View 1: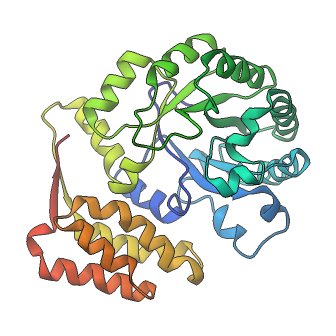
View 2: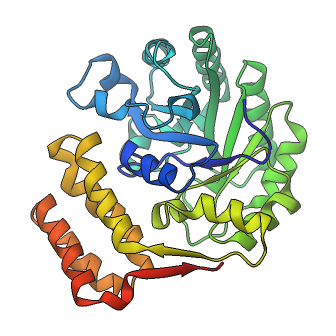
View 3: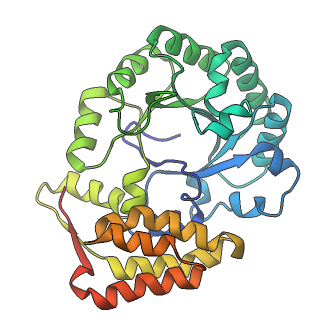
Length: 324
């Protein structure tokens, strides 16, 4: 499957498109890539955009498709469809706390009913013969480790190959530090690997979490959206404590503008570019002001022009040295 040392790109809505995955690969890649959430119902209806969501590029053998939905039969059918596609595995989202997802009975809402979640896992397992089956979840609705442990052991008993824990409860946002002690405690109880996810922003933070909490892999989201070179930086810094990476930010932006139309429909270009630059602008002096201008862009071409104008006006901002 993958090693305990694995670096994994998290599923992020409107972000983990093949364009971002290719940017990550350009710098050296990671061990496993997740797609953004794929609606089971829309996939089965062969919606006009689903082909873009399930594009397995650039490394199908390392790709995990993430499904989201509230119906067991539809989820099983969607998994059966993906079983026939190139890829490493299928993941089911039991962690998203977005209100519209929860109201539909999907995402973290599955954690309300352990028995039904087990039935879902069993149905998915029956449809997946050659691919891994995993689940990404949160601590749950309450800070109750005993409930979380029993819930995850039930999934393991139904044949789930690994679980990813984002150790926050449903109502908590990113301002609350993730409970990585739960990753260590739960990982010690489960017979399957437990991947940890949350608050990995620097090399020091990554190395500390590996050593202190012994996860079965580490999933990184926001830091990789900000810096598609982050995985490569971690691996190089691991080998050489003095390593620093000089990045041409303008070249990365240009590459993104080249890749996005290759992998996304025209309807998505503006919103996907704005979503990417909401993170990428954190690398730049006056990045907040730049993002406000980007967010006011009326088209993909307007967003592109805004970014390129910024680098023309601020040539000193072109390069960044990643040190931490």
